[in-house]
Image (cartoon, rainbow, N blue to C red):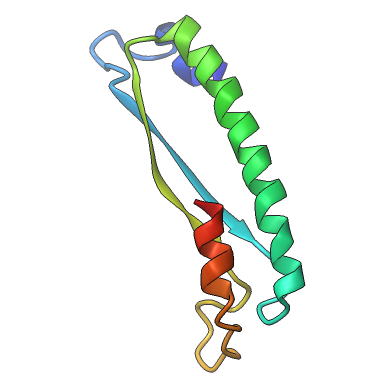
Length: 98
């Protein structure tokens, strides 16, 4: 992150207007709600990483704006046709992530 946020590593006419953060928590099981507890420790890790990057940004490129524009949960086989339906409590767990 230090490399990217250091203006000397970019052409003079290339501004560092904005960076965006993306995060998706995952789980080892699609159908076991107990596996979804890992969403929150993953979110803690993401939050810690964002805090670290923001400290670097404030020093090296304070004019660069930031956004968290993707945040969510991806379960195993979400893109697999015919995957088992997840329990409806998934929606509560996913909403709690926010």
